[in-house]
Image (cartoon, rainbow, N blue to C red; front, side, top):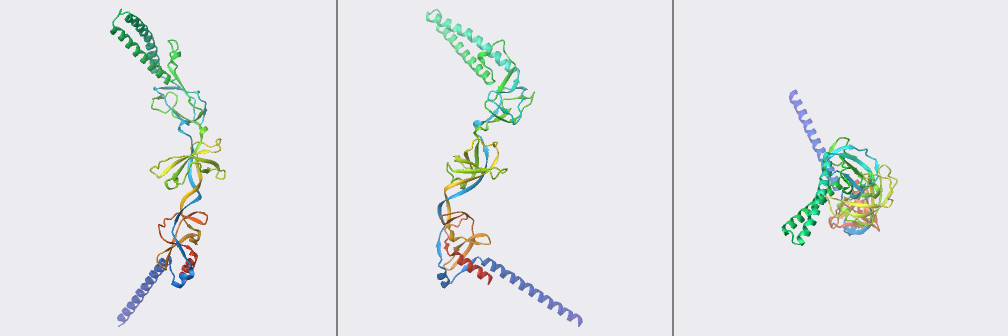
Length: 379
């Protein structure tokens, strides 16, 4: 008997617990539904007349706005020199270190190699032979004019003379490549070393050699940068690049000194979009004597005149909990509040960066709907 009574009590307890859990789940589900529905508001015909709403679509317009981008200081390719040698050799002497300023024409390295000696020898030998062949050509030409020798012998002498001229010219250019003047070369000043000089004024940014190292024509010995023609190179996204124009004013600053802004103007817009959907924009500095190094990272603000944007009237935007919203018409009496990202405001219009397509938007008395929506939610 006691066992049956205990079993009944346990069954009753279990039944009420299940019932309570079911009610709690139903209540929770109803809350979710209400939360989802809080973005929707419906008006009856009387409320609709009283609200005096007006509708419109997102429109294209032109505004003055500021585009924030980043970039770095740069110099044109003509101001960066990678120094290599046309003939391999051993580094005998160099005093360059990164950061050192060198003048154009200053000796930056001395190299030595037996191939330099051989090249000078070949040139002097070819030059000596040219003198002999030239004399023989002149002699054969005179004999041929008097028919004292055949045309074949004259043509052969002329061919040998012409070929030797080509040889001497070729060796002469090779000597110039390694910094030797053929006009000053003779048997008394053949050298096993050659000196290389800086082709520009600038700062040494890379030193890839040391004393005794053997270098080949494909090796870069030094890199020298001339910062005298410094400019600003910006990276701009594809969608923003269409709003840029040559001449736009640019304010830029470094992370180390964000309050000190410098001025520049857009000079060249690269007409190409890379794999990352960006393009390069080159700007000329107003202050060309700015104390920044090539490669310095900068932040920039580009002033855009008549930039094309999508916009709606200011009255179409409502604010709720520090966020921007618009009301989209879903039916004759129904409206939905959706969040939007806004941009610059100008002449009673505000930029909408969210894609709203062709949906009809409440552009007048939108706050009436917001009050109705929030009051309904509290009830």
